[in-house]
Image (cartoon, rainbow, N blue to C red; front, side, top):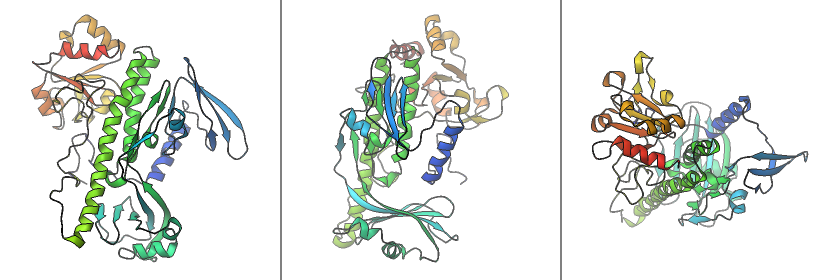
Length: 417
């Protein structure tokens, strides 16, 4: 809706139907001549050496066997991840495990249902309503003590739970499943050339809608580092920052989701006891800020005090550099390091640092006020000489009087030595 675009150039909240999204991703992969897709195979344990990783797989229907070799293995193989177990990684649980029934309904017509997600703090049964996309709607119901998976999946039971909102004449049940919501992150995300991502590395209750989003962040964090190491522009030490950066970020989000779940429980119990929570910090938009990076490939380290910019996603305005058509800044930067400034700073950079920046494909984007079509970067560019942005669009660091550009670039170079 108009007026909902946030600091990063997109609406702060987007709804999508995940099966449709995943089908679209697979179709894109199959059309890309650089991607080979093997569906319906079950993989064995991988073997790795100093050159790469080898894994065998068997087709589950016709028994065809294949062997795949690559420099690295990225395992996004789900919550029960055999690869996670293979590398000896275990889950660190936050102790929040709940069984919930998830129901997707394809409506036959548009009804006057809420337009925003709702957490229903009912003492008789906690529930969630999520308007998905178009005529698709989702409901989630927590199982009460003594209820079984088979009982909850009976169609009559499902329609009785949906009765406060809709009846069987309003739509059809597209999917129903019972999940156990977990809250955990893995103890180990890497073993040599093998990495785990997504649900294999972390699991979260769905109350913030951040499960798949966290997996996408894993990929965005890892692939640019793999690219630099594979090109020989950085050593393997760069890859060690993957877990260093992603584990605390994912853990913070999982913990946040757990807080929301506990708040739902507290508000539901309050309907009976009258004892309401003293604060509501866990609600959406509460005092707890969105997680950021604290260490790794940053100009500051974990023990340093945050400057409120470094380690956060870079704001993204609409820009029109050199009279080009206005577009989002990411489309001009691409997946590269980039120095953003309001005036040209290239000539102030030493020749050796210029060579380093050229080697890693870094860009310099000069954005005077007249070339910014929206205001998202105005304050930062007024306060700082330059902003150094990573390929995943997190801020590596800022350059100002206290932190000269050359010293910040030397810190960046140190991660490639």
